Image (cartoon, rainbow, N blue to C red; front, side):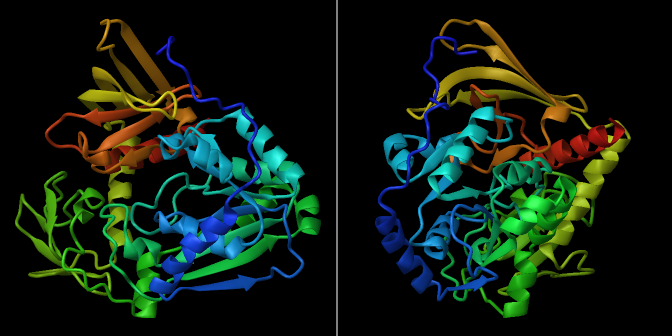
Length: 412
């Protein structure tokens, strides 16, 4: 695919971080404006190199991360779309390029280089922003990486960022009282003694969070009038009439266009039906109900998605290439994409087996171009696939990918 196009140089060794004082100064106003607090736990005597894991909810995560680790140098694993038009800058501030949800041996070499430099190895292990303020799947291979690097494991757990600018509506709500905890969860002596299974158990335990529970507990209010707008991207199925793809939102109201039921999204992040039963007051509960419904479809072998699509490619950090139209199929076997190059009408195809995709990256209204998309990756290419069906949900595709993988991996 795209044989004559230059690819991003994934083999180039990572640079030691420069300009970290600029990053620190840029981050300070973010912390101050949100009345933020950073707490350090069990960090006495913990100095780089160490593996830094962090939850991922918004762009401001990086600012808080820089403040929590200052003045130490750090190298960040960053998705290739973060490098568009600024590759030199991101390499100089410590960026290491990665194509999402791929197994890239180059990354292992790069992280070992960072360790040997005596710097911090930083990974957002969820590999995407949280869809509804709760933790996403963390691969077990992360524990193997930690054991391979043989350095302490530190967790940065941040709260309030999803409430301030959720993935489904990135508007800055200017909330106050964000929090972050930098905590060593496995020290040097422990990483040398613990098994892969024991390391994985510790990492999984510390990667659990719920932003809406945190919001309610802290009493953080969101005054923004349009706070519900975009929530229907995540909550795509009505729990009242059970119909999919008819949910919508406006101002602080979430509603179903099929049956007419409405829910108010409160300043404290809770849902309440304007009439009748409130099926789910807690947003993550609604989301997990959708997951259970998708899992049932997968178990019954009924899940299937097919659509004509528009396809863009990102082979390097220069710009997107428009490949033109294609067809995407997602079923129990995985992803199948095929189409014809816009320029020469040459046929191409891509298959990603179900067992090679424990999750998939999605975007809502990506760059304001063609709407919602699915982000499919190989070691050489990143394809942004925009379904053109009238009614669909990339959230459901994401849930199905995870549930298919769980069932397939268990059976295998």
